[in-house]
Length: 357
Image 1 (spheres, rainbow, N blue to C red):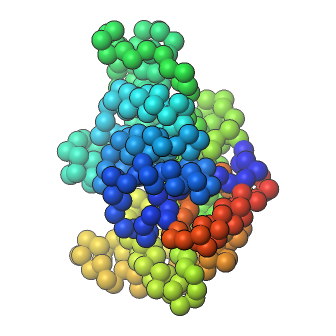
Image 2: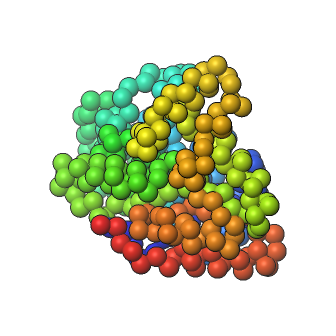
Image 3: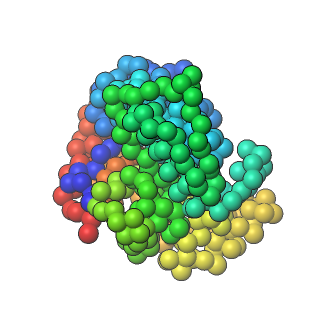
C-alpha cells in the first residue's frame, strides 16, 4: 500500500550540480552529508559512469540516517553471488540503510556492452533474486547454500568466502520494471518496483498495478507491501522564460525514450505506438534531430511534469501522490534561499494523504 507520504530521495546529489551533468564521485561523501542536511530521506545513484556500490559506500561515511538506494544497479552482468556480497558489505557498513535496486538492461547492452548472452529478462530476474536471497540465507542463518534454478545453480559456500551474519540482514530488493512480465516478477519476489520515467499515471494504474497484483497472487504475497518508486521526467525552473529552455531539453529526452522499442507499451497505452515505430526508424538512421518533432505537446505533458518552482511540487503530488511511495527529485541549491525553497518543496511532496487502491 502506498504510504501516507512520499519519501523524497535525492537525485544523486541535488544542489551540487545541474541536472544531467556528470557526477564527480570524489565529492559524493560531502554531497551525501549535504543531502541529509537538506532534509532528504535518501540518496539514489544510478549505474552510469561509476560503480553504484562504491558510490553509496562513500555516501554512507558522513551520514547516519540517509537511506542509500541503487537506482539502479545492473543485475545480469554480475553473478547473484557477487551482487549478494556487494549488497551485504554495504548493508554492514551503513548499518542497515541499503535499498538494493536492480535492473536487467536491454538486449543490445547485454550483448554488445557487457559481452554476455541475452535471455528473456523476467524469468531470469526472478531466478536471480531467489539465488541472491539463498546466498544471504546461507550467510545469515548458517544453512547450506542450495539454489537450483533455470539460470543459476548454487551449492558451494566454503568458510573462506562466507562473511557470516550481520546486524541488519533484511535488505529490500527493488526491481526496475516497465513491461508486464517484469511487473509480475516484482509481485512474486521483490520488495519494491522502480518505475521508468516514461510511466504515466494511466500506464501505472491500467497496466502496471494489475500486473504486480497478478504476480503477487502467484506467490500469495500482499501487493500492498510493495514500495513504488519513481524518478519522473521533470522540467522545472525558477520562471517561465527559463522553463522554456529546460522544457526543450526534456522534450528531447522524451524523444530518446520514444525511440526505444522496449518502452513502447508505455506510449502505446495512449495511442502513440506509430510514433514509437517512426522514432525507432529515425534512430536506426541516426537522424536524432528529427525525433523531438514527434513529441507533440500532448505527449510531452503526459510523459513529463512541467512547471515553475512555485508549482512543481504540487504538480508532482497531484500526478503521482496516490501512486508512488518514493520520488527522486531535486533542484540546484546554491544559497540559503534555495535551501528554504527546497525544504518547502519536500514538505509539499510529503503532504499526500491519498492511498493507492
